[in-house]
Image: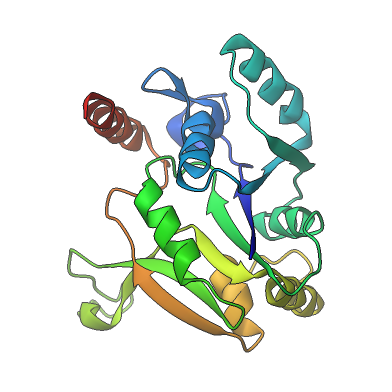
Length: 230
């Protein structure tokens, strides 16, 4: 099967208190997004990479590549107003063929291992979507009534999520009718399942965090430092 990956990198650094978009913030010597793309290339050398960026940050991307002397074989696509629209823009670049699978990954998840990426793609087929998940470590409560929830039936959802491309495209077309901006959909598995398609879970990694806060930067620096020494 032909393998594609849409790397969605439309975030900002506001929650970290900075002006730089978080996908460009440096960890372990280079921008977060460089680590994300590098591990995909390492995991699946012949993968077709599509990078979705805000329109006003595309020039920043090219300048960073020049500054760090990094070369990535990626197709750059302009993002939308929401994550939903950004992924939809990326999907337009993928051939509408039966033997194509596509993964969608958060650009600010640079710690996903090559092993996890390979596992998600190897489990992929033309019938169902693949979603990496992890068990909850801590107890959780309902904020309204302070009642404990049964965490055994709950999972943390991660990316990359991998799908048959034609089905994911159909799912996006269906969900655009319901919600053009896609604000009710938190990720691609929610779009896929809303359209009636099946999902399959694989074991994710606790280290595969989404960089959101300054504490996440500290953790990422530490873990990447350890990995570089191995």
